[in-house]
Length: 98
Image (cartoon, helix red, strand yellow):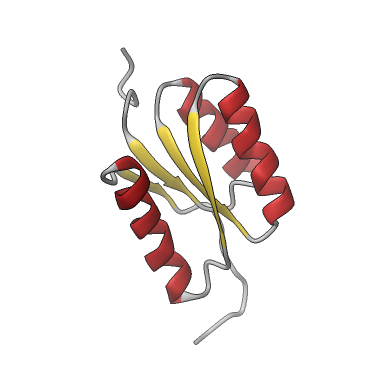
């Protein structure tokens, strides 16, 4: 058993790069992944790859600069997996102030 076994993890920016690598690695270590990104087609491909490898993951598309995206992510973690243990805030925005 690993330290990530059965941990519920939100990963933003999970459709590519570091976010994708984190989501796949954490899932391989037994974490349940709530994956987020704006590019939903790429995000769905990451979730499918995790599932094909025997992991558990769901996709929640949305822009991290919008508060409602964060609310939906937490709600998805709670409703689908029953909790939330870790948030990997990988996605970001430049020069966006609201």
